[in-house]
Image (cartoon, rainbow, N blue to C red):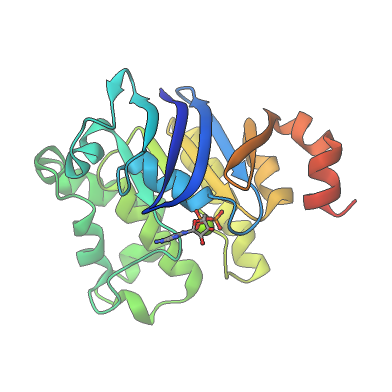
Amino acid sequence: MLELKSVDAGYGSFQALFGINLDVKAGEAVGVIGPNGAGKTTLMRVISGLIRPTRGTIAMEGTDVVATPAHLIVGLGIAHVPENRRLFPRLTVQDNLKMGAFMPQARAKFADRLEFVFDLFPRMKERRNQMAGTMSGGEQQMCAIGRALMSDPKLLLLDEPSAGLAPVVVQQVFELVKRIRSGGLTVLIVEQNVQQVLKVVDRAYLLEAGTIRASGTAVEMRESDTVKQAYLGV
Ligand SMILES: Nc1ncnc2c1ncn2[C@@H]1O[C@H](COP(=O)(O)OP(=O)(O)O)[C@@H](O)[C@H]1O
Ligand SMILES: [Mg+2]
């Protein structure tokens, strides 16, 4: 579904990603793990078109993402839940959700999508008229994921959805990822919570200093000495 080949990217003269090769097949959940500053967020941004690669190719179902204008990338079926959620705190939950349905196709399906999101998150339905910024961290994460789902994506990019949440809420977020995924969506998820993420993904990539250091099935990654020593504390 998604294929990156030899992707370099960065900010001005600073290079953050070096020769990234990564693929995600339809229906898979794939994780990207790695320390702070490794380039995980940059990788998500380059896939959703917020920044452009300086080298390499990115294809979504065979379409060249790099040649697609940023505002049309969502139309290819890619939805990005950014790090730190980036909701509009003074807008209501429902208005935040509306922001995720700005493409003409999505606008036409707005009522259906809203129902879908409210079914997935009954809490968001209860809170639909509440200002997003006044909700708990877990609720805000639900709202951010809901907003991304409003565009009826094929591929959901999740950037550290569990960051800053209480342990019990972290569990709920990972349960949610499982549910979203069993609903047929393809998921690419960045996480610092390596232990948890390796329980919900099929495969994972280890990103360090802007390069892919290791990749494999979730089981292989759990058993890899590199991953164990650096990220699982065993
Ligand atoms: N907007 C930016 N401008 C300049 N450098 C940035 C910017 N965002 C991130 N970086 C740098 O790019 C590298 C990778 O950052 P990032 O992708 O955010 O890593 P991660 O998400 O794995 O913590 C870091 O060295 C970071 O300082
Ligand atoms: Mg990050």
